[in-house]
Amino acid sequence: MNKTESLVSGESFTYELLWSCCKQQMAMARSSEQGSHYFYLTAMTMAYFTFEAYVNHALSCVAPEIFENEKAHFSKGEYSGAPGKLKKLCELRGFDLPDTSRRPYQSIRLLQNLRDVVAHGKTHTFESRVKHLIGENPSVVESKFDKFVSAKQATMCLDDTQEFICWFNSQLRASFFDCGLLVSPLSGFHGHSNAEYVEEP
Image 1 (cartoon, rainbow, N blue to C red):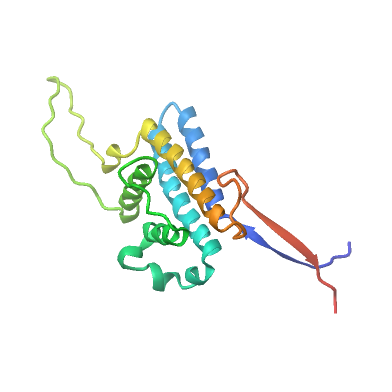
Image 2 (image 1 turned 180 degrees about the vertical axis):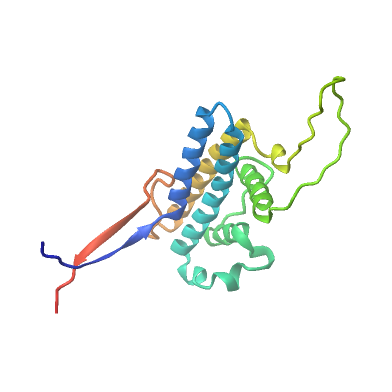
């Protein structure tokens, strides 16, 4: 069979892929009789990675000249990390940074704290007095993740992450209509591409 060659170009949206991972992990958690805690942990961690990836994508669309020098602009100070990039996007749009003490952005801050615990990977040491019945062993295993991860927390945080990203996306599109942001983010549209036939010399 004869072969030809085409030049393929396009975009693969990392935040959309990560969001699909979130939803898959939530589905696994809800259908698992045992070990659902692990799936909720993964879903919540991926939710924050989705937020980070969306902010990167939005910044590259709205201000590509700033995003090209990402390390110079966002490595330290008030503009460091994803929260700093969000602040810069708010300034470019002309409105204040969302209230971190209220949902939905409050949930993203919770996810950020969880992400930091996961990323730093430190062993958690503990000591506590536990009441228990004579002849039974006390429950002695505690984890930093226990205060973050539950079915209720996971559902709330993923709902709030989706609400915030969709709202913020609509705000950016209102000011930067032709910047390349999708009309409906977190919809499962992972990317697009075009192919162009390349003539043989």
